[in-house]
Length: 479
Image (tube, rainbow, N blue to C red; front, top):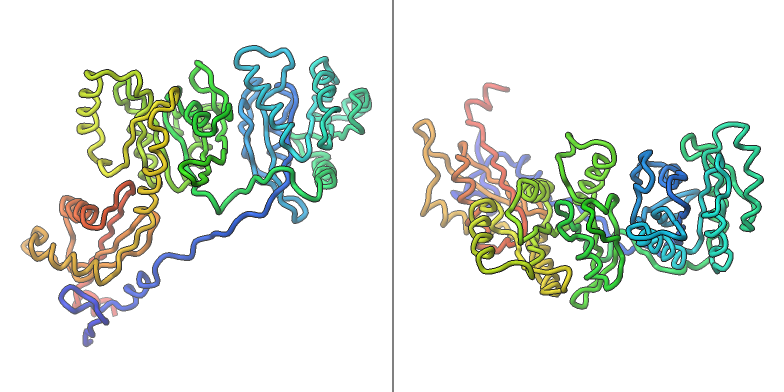
């Protein structure tokens, strides 16, 4: 078999496996894009533990909202995309609404009230087994003044006796109550039909999802200041903030204008444990956070600069890297850091974050707003690197000079040759090297470092894959 050189291929002009090369020459698959059409918004409200999140999951047709028997699991207003009978809309799940709430519950109530004011339709969920309490009556009094249409869902109608009690909810003055079971799905189709009929022809608020703004995940361990950062960015109390660690359970979406550009920020639950060892609400919150990282393009990992770097911090950073997302490390609470702590932090970074020395860094204070404006340039740099593609000719010219000056170490008495290289895809930048032998891990790290320095891959992981060419006699033996 005669080996024909590919056009422009090979650092030494030869490479025979054209089929394997063609697999990578095609480049990355097309990216999904396009701006999402405006969608009407349904706000789901009610007092704590009436089954709002269970009903939301039923309406969505998938398990998205965190559900647990403990009242008050949902604390922020959380948006989900829904589809029924070919029509898309946004569902906003809210924290339990208490008219006389104080402290944390007062913040939860404010989130629910804001959702009611900005929604195109409101769904009041009532526990049919309990009936209308003084809380429902207070909520109904507010909703009767609302310009948006209101529907009443009599939830937990799981038997005939409960179904007979639904009519008592007419007393709320919000129209006919609709019996439904979030747990079993009874009546959910009729409820969805009624929701679509209640929506106006033109949505009140444009909550576009997908496409458009670059997606940013705010991640970090509990109480590191993620929700405070989101509130600082948005300029309002978009997320619930409390001194109690772990206030955020679900991811919270916000459109943020930063440095004349709109970004989609997602505030996530603080990660205490590995997903495999977490339980209950924490387990599902960990899954939501992992999903938020996977759905994001760049992650901002918040670290408490006033405290020593912890295993949790390192684990979260590694999770972002493993997901292949662009990375910005934001050292929060910088207003609490003195000179001694700054010197100690630099040592910790040099010791513990040596593998992610390429990450973008910024020192900020979510409480005072210090240097928050510097986030946007760091995000842009990281995303530009994440999207960067190196032309094949330029890549091979660089590798030819590098390998000639620093050849790979011999293994088993034979020195491998790097025959050809190509960038297989972006997001993150992934390079494939076709070689005549195995490249040691240390040499691969050396090549990655030189790639970063030469082509400026600041703020993004870089992946390097090696394809070893079979020897000619081995290929003949397989025929």
